[in-house]
Image (tube, rainbow over all chains, first blue to last red):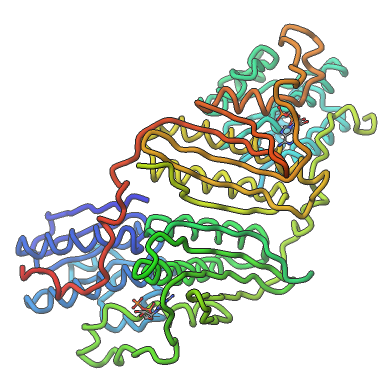
Length: 112
Length: 112
Length: 165
Length: 165
Ligand SMILES: Nc1ncnc2c1ncn2[C@@H]1O[C@H](COP(=O)(O)OP(=O)(O)O)[C@@H](O)[C@H]1O
Ligand SMILES: Nc1ncnc2c1ncn2[C@@H]1O[C@H](COP(=O)(O)OP(=O)(O)O)[C@@H](O)[C@H]1O
């Protein structure tokens, strides 16, 4: 039931946030807090790595959309790394694949 | 909820039965059937490898004791391979560590 | 096989229990039904959305009321119901998020739960009750072979009762 | 914190559901209590033994009756009760298996459940009810930090409500 949140700052100007575990209404507040913290530290190019996420529901989507919105207002961006079909599906059904840039690896996300 | 049961006959005169998963009153009947089948095929030196077992309750113990008894009556033996503390503990509490020979690996079990 | 109640579960209206409800539903669905893993994942997500809403609904008026979960099965289907004691709502009168091409879309961080539920399960019913809301989610798919569990129940008698080898 | 009912679960008197009961108890125990993994394993095993007995008891007289599971908690403990609708028994009058040194020991493939329960949990009570048996198993250990889940509940409002960064 723990959400893993690991920040990698070695890919400037990108900050990579690797999320591990299940993102639902119980764990999403921690994801939101972490994003707020990063933005407040002036990190405006955030790559959220969802490869370690086993489950993501609409609460998690809401936090990611909120983060994207906040970053865009700073001329930044929030992009995603995700290859797992079960997680991609949630973005597809909700149409959010057209809102987020989704990459197949962190390398690709920071290369663009 | 599936119980894995794999028979390795390459260690004559020993037959190694590798068990994977949870052994409880739901899955124990399959373990018992497999032991009955092996005994009926004339296999009287059976090594039950419990390294892949995540959970074992008294129903599982009962099946192993029943197998041992049946094999002893054929001048055979049923020995165990088990290193996981959580499984060993069940044998310890019930005093069955004194009834079964328990080895740290299949190699050790077939070497004795 | 008639429609039969398989399992009932009451959990507190607290977010940490949703993971347990998901776990239980997924375990029963995989054990009892011939469902692809993907369908089980869909059901899990729909259940999670319904539980999130049920908890939120309870918190407004009856924070101490549990969320009540039932799993029912019939030959061709599995049904999960999630019931709360909240004020209820009209699912046909929900505001839909604007199309994703609209820049306004980003202001909608919510409102995705019910559309997800409707998409993920074969049938979703939002039933208004006197005491709250019951969301019934149905997935079709036959029982697994292990359906008649009575048959494989081990009579606990010893090996001695088996026919001689 | 007063003794409070955390969760109720009814499962059919069928062996395949015991794994689900174990899963639920272990999830709640790890999420709610400061218990070592080893203690959670002990509780899981005790619960499994009690469920096996409850199912067997129900099957004799009320095969359609469910096994009823409750999880209770107080500041210093977690209690799990497993209740059946069987004929009951006197736990003090059970035959004990002979000492393991006795060659007769091998004839005892059963009778290990109750001794295991007694050894594995801090307190085990076998309560005779009008309608069956209730086995209450207690483990001591404090709540985890996440105890007051209300505090971390996300009000579902958007980022916009946060103080400006
Ligand atoms: N069980 C329920 N009881 C009362 N209202 C509900 C319930 N489920 C959904 N609703 C209402 O429908 C709205 C839309 O729900 P949903 O699509 O899940 O999105 P969200 O929960 O993110 O708002 C909720 O905001 C709530 O007002
Ligand atoms: N819930 C119960 N209802 C009725 N009888 C029970 C119950 N639990 C245990 N018993 C009785 O106590 C005996 C010993 O139980 P146990 O130690 O678990 O071993 P086993 O179940 O392998 O016989 C059982 O055989 C049964 O007769």
